[in-house]
Image (tube, rainbow, N blue to C red):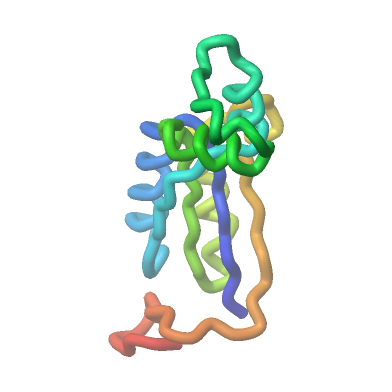
Length: 130
């Protein structure tokens, strides 16, 4: 069975290191997305240094959209669809770089079972799809 393994971290350098380690450990592909956390966005909105044009400040969603455009995306989300047997090794690689994921600010990892994975390269064959 294929699994989706996800790691979210605000430590960009370590996140990229984990992505490379996952690839070297046999993950058929690793996608890295830049992201932001809603909590960070809300904190930024409440900060004194934020100057929002008056016409944008009329609604909360308009303000959030404006702040989002102005914010640096400071998180990485790593995604990889892998065979179930590869998951423990990839989680161990994440721990080796990030430290104990149960500690605050070390990242969040989770694994989701997939009923079907279309277009995913099988690491054990030359086929382009599983």
